[in-house]
Length: 229
Image (tube, rainbow, N blue to C red):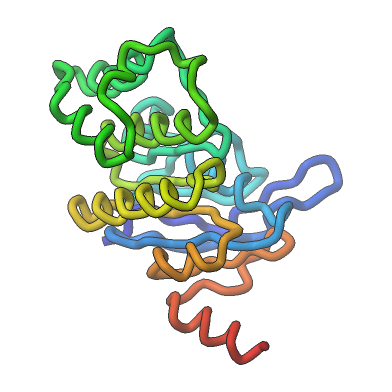
């Protein structure tokens, strides 16, 4: 089933072309590594998919309906986004991790929250701590848990382990893989780490100067890379 479909997405800023006619489909259960050099348009694409930025032209549909026709809050429940620089709000970690339940009009499930904290290698007692007390890597993990608790159908991850050491990177990768398998969660993740993309992605999308120059299987992409050596 096609969850998300982009058709001829273009983005210009003044005289500069950021995205140049991107068209692709995301199916249920896809796991797409979005690669490309800095400035190739990866983050701009994610912002358009999440209604944080408007395309100059083209369209994006979710479940066959133009994303612009959805209230942004409603769409963001279905298409989650974890930023490279995480944003935590409120006073405490608990404010952040109970917020998804407020959105879903449900009573907070502290057992579920504790399970996610354990899977992300974070202690349960951080719930009462202030959000300002944490490192970038800890904030990144809290923001990821917050997005997962909303139970999106699609999750956009922008350099989601950029602030983590090697041990915690592997822990968070496993958490993401588990969620992908458990929920058939469709994931698109931006990474400059080719080894990470090779470990995780089923498909690779490569952007170059705002164009998709490759969109296919992980095996095909890395076979091409080997031939080019």
